[in-house]
Image 1: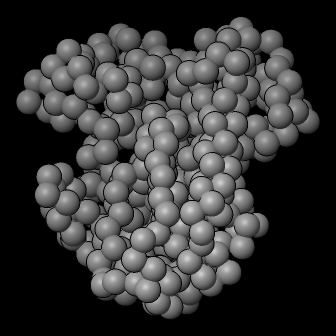
Image 2 (image 1 turned 135 degrees about the horizontal axis):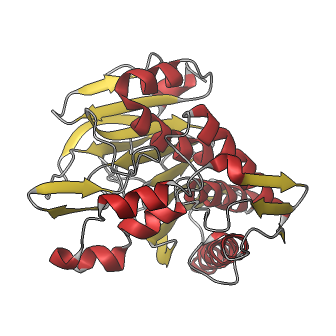
Length: 340
């Protein structure tokens, strides 16, 4: 993987940019939907190496959004009938969930352990308290910073070790704890979308889940996809660096994605579960490159919360992941398998 990752590309959140010229298919089929509080775009260039018909592409993209809808209704904490909402509302009682939900929770717990609790899948009380949802951020100056007492109360209910999983039964031992899968669910869904489109013989496509990108195959002209990573806080979409990608997933977490200003200070959505506040370190963004979008999704948050030294040490110890860190001063840090 380390050698293969040299061909990977960097994604910037919510938007990808194709940096190099035209392809032989000038009019790919694309559609967007809105799930998990983010825009999702599926773009199909080729099926079996040829430009698809409108009907073929529309059917596949429709199937993709049906899948997105299914998983949002299974995993979103804000939908009362979802597995996650049922667990959170159970008051400490056992809840039977789907096998997929149980497996995803086990993965989330493993990353909670890997980050020594800075990343915590039971961060729900803090996420609700800070509320970086799109609707809240649009309120602008109405957005308020929680008090120290509110944060302390929320932290007292954050502890991934309070989750017990037996087969498909999940129990939160703290009735006031709540699970939040925002740092891993989009990657999980991206992997499911990838499986779906590949099963339909799609050979060239891009899937973008608001910061989670999957590049399937090459561009129709045979070249690797060329994309760029956004300079943090650039309003014009300026690119800070670029790489190429074939058959891989890229996920970026950054402090410019969901944030607001109050009292002359910027607050972002990457919360440290130990302090209850947005993590304050030298990094503006972390981009992870690896075969699994779910893994990249979780690692992008874990590495940001660990900081540049421990985060890069973690990536360099893994055989199936690479990373590019963008520091707040806009300098770049590449993992050992990548070159500028």
